[in-house]
Image (cartoon, rainbow, N blue to C red; front, side):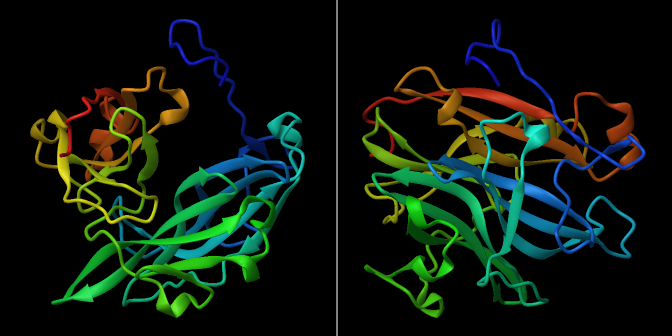
Length: 285
């Protein structure tokens, strides 16, 4: 994307191709099973890093007929070149986990603070027969992102190298969310769809990247869920990189449907929807 103002900005789209020249996924999994979903990414002196989850189909014939089978760190060492020429190295993230008890995934959100990259993720925990998602947090020096031995994990009130001590932070988080610094509030803010899928887009704030996180506050209620009982909303997150003013935050979300035919016939669905949120200094007090 070139420029921040919609009236003047330009967006270029890239996709992969098969040996026969047909359209294909932009990044293929290094282990050829299923496909990759790109989470958050960051550009550093060592290249462009993309956090990705590997997805495979299940026997379920629905919009949720898939499962997560992997969590990868991709590194494009030549991001200055056109994306079609990127050389992307993939590394399996060793702490990721996928089972009937719940998934553990890193890369939901990334935040750069001074020399560190804070890497947010989710961990699912069984609670009275249900799986609840919690925020988890790692950090690493920006110069050492691909060296997993240098990662540290937030555990209570300190950083440790032992992942098993990682603290569970916010409850009822979503797989996709954002964390950024909000100058108008002088706090860090996390934005997400409540409980992963909800008409409620909520935000929590914290004085530090690791918390403590306040209670969720509803920023917006998505009207699309009232269109039909088979429509749901999800994937809310903030985008400070395209926000123009210090007291604002661009937020996106997606409206989707459980019904394939409705998705195919209603062009209002399954595309990003944009909100402009403006903050007052007294908000979240």
